[in-house]
Image (tube, rainbow, N blue to C red; front, side, top):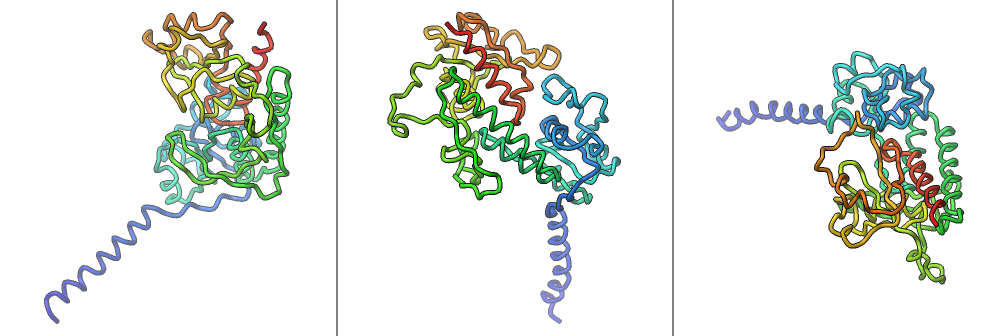
Length: 340
């Protein structure tokens, strides 16, 4: 046997072993149990869904942030066990399902799969139609589709009330039965990249709360007559077109003062010569979020940005994409009713 052939026989087993190790490093996701009974949530976004959709008897532990002020379901989380999103702390509890949005890091899904624990990854919702989709899909995966559909219908009713309000000229989208096949469209991520098509639960518009323009209705647009609103966070940022916050602002009957798309710094230079009609500020509580003195939200131009009182929004309403974001839209709509 020649030397190169002998070397080949020696190298081949090593190559095959390396391939098998590579496959083990990226295992396929495990199938979610039909009805998990020992659920662990790894972050506060996941906490909201598990607390809303399943009975407490099925929840093994929540994230450490479950009772913080930015957690919408913090009241329901009171007194429940918590666990840090570390693999060793979670595995010792012997869960039959891990629910996560971002908790545990990017490799959490693969790690728990190697340990034999299924992971349910929450979907990303960039608009209200996406929030509804994630809600129903998550409920279905948790064995609670009926409960999820009920909450989705409550969302439909709240959106309809906002749309039909005399303070909001929005045209409500048409809700279709959940059992019917839904149209898909390509969507764009927050960074402007095209991502996978998403299922739309509202037809015929391009999503929940879509405002029709002149070309669609044949009517003179009333958008210019709407009051303007600037959304702000204590950290000094705002949100423009293409975001969930923008959709909520328009659903509440305002024009978004911020015209640049996505998340942007507060437009202090523009505020020097132009003012919004209203300012809505998301508060996260001094103990949980206390921006330094240099935050743009503390600038004198922000303090004098509007003649009307600031609309206070609980940070928990918009900290995660969930059914509860409509609380923010309703608060803004109620404040608009006090306008002269």
